[in-house]
Length: 302
Image (cartoon, rainbow, N blue to C red; front, side, top):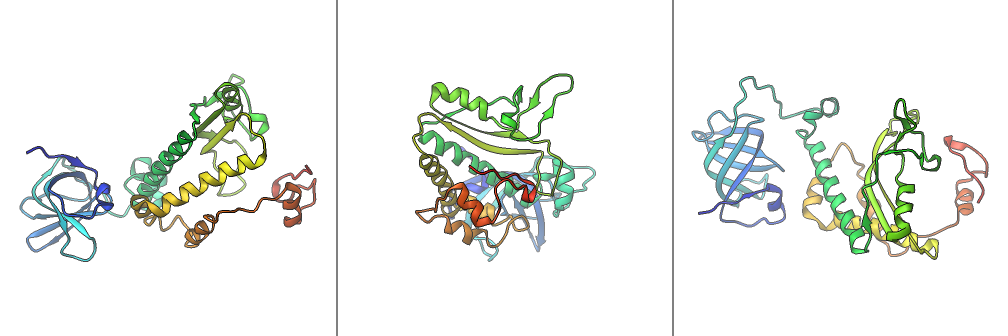
């Protein structure tokens, strides 16, 4: 009988009993009770196995289990794998893993980052959102451009550049000018990639390196066309968060990195109409006089 290896998260969206499955992963927690061992791997899914088969398993162990995916006997998860074959794929002679890797440690030690449940959830969520972003623009006939990261332009002064020593070459602050050149023939282009800013850090929110989505369109007749595109994109991602069981389960794990008010605020954005105002109206609402540098920025009259 041919067995297929599955990613555990696939079954988050399919909580139904299945034929025999083979699951691979790293043990995130190990709990023993009587003659059974309960091993949590991957996205929090549980493997139940006889303690004789699971001898030597510990946190961090790479394992492979074969068994039946069925309703859980406990109330902590809906489904679990009851294994009748269990293999430890590697042994650590000096185990130092902890089931609880602190966020600070994960930031300082990159190789531990994916072991932190919340960081792992962030990485998986980003991947799903990046895929949805590409799907959105491809449906609208945009061409994906891999813009260069080393460039001789500073994107019209969009931010301070990191300069490559000994040459008038910079790490890109924006792919805007490159995309504009491509749009002159391809009409609709976009890129989702890394950008760099060398401004002196004014707060903990400043990032020297970050991921940025940029798009350029030829033959645009009005600013409303651009606003419609931006609104449609944001609402597409909100629908993804609401409708995707896998993404929803990942975001639920990002407790320390999100605000409890995020969800209600996102739901408000699904309203069909977003108000649109002119720049001068925005300054008036904010009570910022034109020409001032309030808050570290500079506001010009348009």
